[in-house]
Length: 263
Length: 258
Image (cartoon, rainbow over all chains, first blue to last red; front, side, top):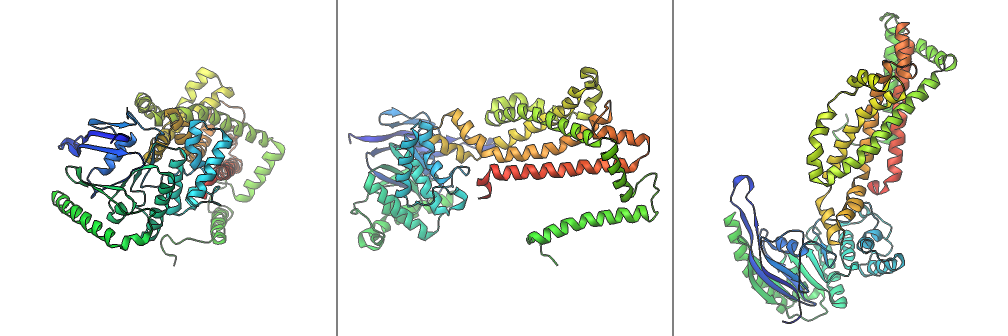
């Protein structure tokens, strides 16, 4: 427990009521420690505050209480040390794929030749060679999200945050993207925080699954996934995987029902 | 029968577009040459073309056209240089918007043409006065429209830029401006069209050159052919400038069409 890279201390978030309504408690005080090289998936039904938690870590939202420490320093706002991949396609449409990947490096003032090398290596890693000079509009959703991952990684962030990045993709593409991301993680050992509502995705990717409950949003379970690496998609049909899936389905089903009733 | 929203081919589109022009001229020729409308009030197309030819060859109308174009372009560029940066700042910084928006919204409704007498008083009847009419007519429109466009920038793009290490200024320079550049160009194209109406108004009063001046001169002579020729020339120039603007936008922002 000594080398926690990210420490979430009693972070809560209350959204003010809309039009005189009661304030919404999106996130109850929540604590979480993320170790170096962890791949943590945060699993929960919609409205459980998992995205809110991730946005607070990214610095895009402010906690109503508590604090987040990255390498011991309190997070005050967004920064290049936390790379983020969004569910919506957020590539800059006026930049080519290569320019998109180079965006963070340019902001940092990395010299051009070095920039080119880094961009080339990440284009390769996400399998987009030959598409460097395309505009995002010319690429499929899966390719755009691969670029978004490359763009975030090119910045060499201390932690990679992903907010349902494959949520808008079809099932087949989603499976391929999971393997791609996992492959990169296995090779580079990044620290990853990944939000999803997909149980299979949560297990397949994670070294730890955090299950969250809805209304009020808080952490319900913290389950470590001991499946061996490298993982292959065939793993999704093994008994170990299935029993984990059954366990998590049970956890989350209860929550989904409660959330639905509360709504 | 065409179905709703069904696309139409390129050649059909051009044929249809031209055929309305032909129809329009045919109806006009029928009404005037057929004797249904008095020649005093409306010249026929042939007289109009003859008058136009005379204007161009004998009365130096090309010079008038040049003067008018220069006034529109001059006043418009002046307005754009000032309005676009203000609009971008208003769109980006909400306090700046709160500061200026009410005034600009009010000023936008001040009719540029109503300023003509005042501007003659202030700036005389020289070129400055013509430029100012166009400037006043364009500047507030551009400011407001640019501010709205920039204010509507996709939030997730801005957030992505922040998580990639952009600072506030970087977000303005490398997200808000490029993201809205095509729309700003489109706004300029639109307002340039309006600037043409202001210039004619400015030239109708206290002017000794320009298309508007020619039109008011022709009125005294009841030369409806010349007046209509002047109006049509304005339309043609508008069409050309619109075309050029669109072509320029296409080449400047290939990513939009990609």
